[in-house]
Image 1 (cartoon, helix red, strand yellow):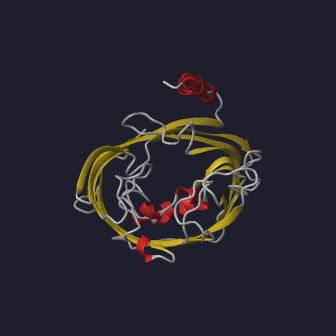
Image 2 (cartoon, rainbow, N blue to C red; image 1 turned 135 degrees about the vertical axis):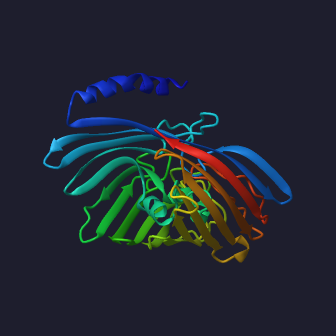
Image 3 (cartoon, rainbow, N blue to C red; image 1 turned 90 degrees about the vertical axis):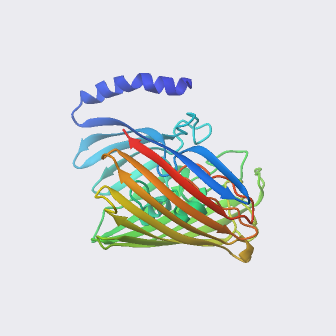
Length: 366
C-alpha cells in the first residue's frame, strides 16, 4: 500500500474521534465502487474487458465542515479516483486528483481554493440526464468532451447565493502558478457561469478561457494562445420524462489539428447532446436513459462523429444499483471516438471505424 494512503487510513479513526468531540464540526468518509463488463465491436475486432467507473466514478474521499457561527462554515473536500479492478490511481501521481480544496460557505455564497471542478463540469452533469449516473457511459457529451474544460488546479471557485432562481459561478486559476520552467501564463483559466432554475425548468450558460501552448511541450519562452469554451444547457422535468439538452463550442485553437498536451488544447469544434430520462420503467426502481448527439470538427467534416446510447438503471437499494446498456458511435474517416466511461477511456477505436458497445455492471456507495 502507498505509504501516504496508509498514513491517511491510520489517521481516520483519530479524525473521527476528534471531530465527534466537537458538536459543531464533522468529517465524513465516503466513497463509491463501480465495476462492469463491457463488450465492443469495431473494425472487425471484438473486445471484452472488465471495467471500472463506467456509470459512476470509483472513488473515496473526505469532506468536512466547522461551524463558525452566524451561518458561516469552514468546509473542505479531498477526493481520490481509482480503478476498482486493480486499485491503481485514476489521476497519476496525485493522492487526491479529483478534488482537493478548502473554503468557506455562508450568506455570501461559497468560496473554494485548490483543485476544483469548473462551472462547466457541474453543468455537464446537470444537463446530461441519468439516474445512477449523469454525464457518463452512453452520453454523447461524455464521449466528445475534452478533460481540460472540467477540472483545474491552483484555482479559486466562487458560487453566489440563489436569488430569484439565479445563481452565479466564477472560477480563476493560475496554471503554471509561478513555475520557472513554463511560460508565465500557461494554463491560466477563467470561467463564468449563470444558472436559472424555476421548478421543473432549468437553463444555464457558461464561458471559459484557457491559455495553452502552441507546441506539445513548453519552455519559459514558448508562445501561447488562448482558447475559449461556450456552454448552453436546458432541461425540463415533465414527471413522466425528464428532457435535457446541451451544446459545447470550442474556439481559439485554429492551428491545433489534434490534441495538444501543453496544458491542453483541442481543435475548434462543436458538440451537442439531447437526452431523456424515463423514470419507473418496468419497475418503480428502474429508469431508462436515451442519449443522442454529434461532434462537429470545424473546417473538416471527416472528423465528425455521431453517438447514440440507451441504458437501463435499477436500484437494488438506496446505495446500490445495477445497469445495462447498448450504444453506438459512427465516426468520420479522421475520428476515433469511443464509448467513454465516467472516469476512464473506452475501448479504443481506430480512426474511421464505427463502434457498437454493450455494457452491464453494478455500483454501490458507502
